[in-house]
Length: 400
Image (cartoon, rainbow, N blue to C red; front, top):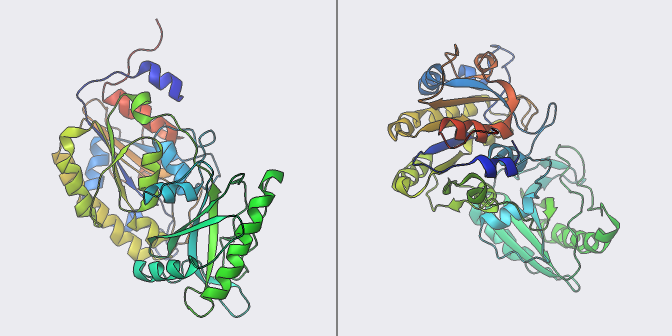
């Protein structure tokens, strides 16, 4: 269902929908046990939800395509990730409330570690503290670029925001993150003739940053990705006729919610803080996006046991969510992050929907294997929103 059809069929009522996104939810079997992180974790509350709801596997973008977090979330929000594209830089800017101007080009930065030959040995610089990130950003602000204003802002841990501001800049630039270890970061390349004048100051920034960071091990270099300008997307409330709120800790996910017009609620840093925030604002909104990051971080670190523990923590808040008696409760993932790969992957993601109007299938556990047999089958993540709205009685009949 495209957004125009959703706008045509959407109706209002008093129902409540909760979309609980466990970032990097899906995984792969451990070679010693044959069980994935989700299969090995103790998740009785998710299992009960699966037994009482309907299950399946979502495909975030397309078969065989490994999604970034941006496309993965936009699909869950009902936005076709092929049509509605946004760079990571814009999401980081929105997430930290940076005043992004139409002429700006934004990029997401990672402080990283390189060896004596300039080859990447850690893409996240050991996940340095946010305080250290702030100190390094202060140093990088000393860089001056001809005819281009430069902004460097800390985000969280090893992440920072780079913004280039000048008339005529173009965001169609290649990334410098090689997405693997043991190689040197490439220079920025213009992906269109109009972007050549933007690639030059970007590379000048990298050259100066390399000099400044050289003695700041483990954060002795940086990587840039997601160059982009601010796009214009249809407003979530206008399309789905629901007052929508987002509860998320990490700036990028707050940025995604802002991009589609959700109200981003101030919250603390723990999952328990997020749950308390959701409860506090329960009467104010119709739709809640609740985000939990830890499973993805553990998966990217290749930490099987750590991801298991994070999934068990995700399971622990399910009773409190159920006690709120939402009309629709969904648990989903934006993508799979198997610890065996230590990266995002193309594998479909477990999904469960619980409502008074669903006919429970025979799924009795919430994991990759069990959800394969769920009644929803393997389906596009863009179908999550129409499913939710149907079960919340928020879609009228199509056609005569």
